[in-house]
Length: 244
Image 1 (cartoon, one colour):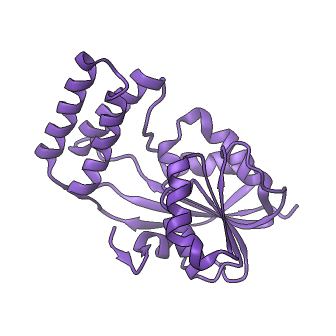
Image 2 (cartoon, helix red, strand yellow; image 1 turned 90 degrees about the vertical axis):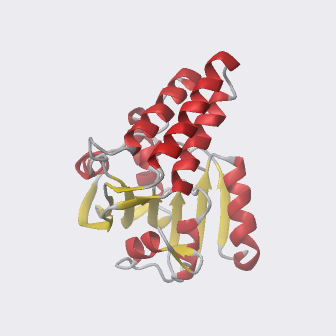
């Protein structure tokens, strides 16, 4: 997960075989704007960075906006109902989005991404495969999901096999053009694990101390016990939408 300049190598690798220059692009689930940075670096005419998180929207704007004001639009919106026009985007990129979506949200978001994409448009979906059953990180991910379910009734993480995501988008008229491996194994560093523990801490803060404090302690103990681990894979799927 090292970076080349301001753009993670996984993003660069996922976009390497895509025509980005001069095209209108969408980063679906902008996070901190890694893919937005990659699309702009590759010469995108315009990038819509869409996120439903106000903090992420501010981060992307602060990180990238000043030097790309004429090519970037940061939009705070639900990915199930964006303000973008129908058939307006040449290339949609969703990097590390689907694993933070519960199964019930996959189909409506796929439908919305299809609506905004132009006929014969392109879609790149990058995500983490199901970790091996014996991976130590599974214990931390399971705790994160347990905390999320207690607080808001949905999992924080869901790992989808590539075939599942391919089927979801195929149902909306997309065909897979290529699949590639971005990371094998995935380097789960102490910093990455602590980021997942921080999610547990945030959920724990919404609970009574009698529940929240043990959850926080368990997350911190797991990070200390695991340290770091290299396991699992990150994959990339490239799709093309059927010509209208």
